[in-house]
Image 1 (cartoon, rainbow, N blue to C red):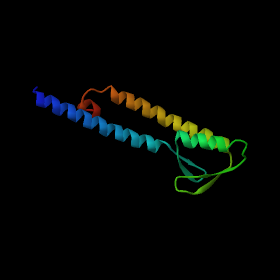
Image 2 (spheres, rainbow, N blue to C red):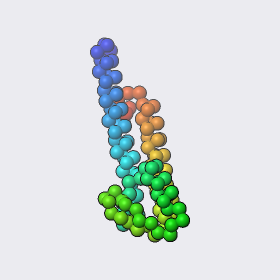
Image 3 (spheres, one colour):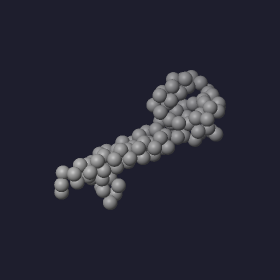
Image 4 (cartoon, rainbow, N blue to C red):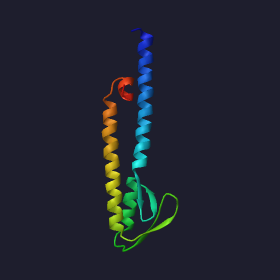
Length: 113
């Protein structure tokens, strides 16, 4: 293998790695969507923490979904629990997939050939 071949192989590896990380991120963002009581919520740690603080001692709560619709949450505790469970599952799957991707050492192994 010539030096040029090695450079091209390394460049292909980094290009495939970047592309696969982008796909993982898109999948992660999709997995962080929670449909709840007619609303669609994009979850993040900040969103969950904010709702958890606001929901303290509330029987009902209005929350803006990702389409800027005010959704009445009838049981804020269940909503926060659902959000945490959804986010935890998404980040666990993302972390495992990213760890697996980092262990691959060639462009062919990254794309599964």
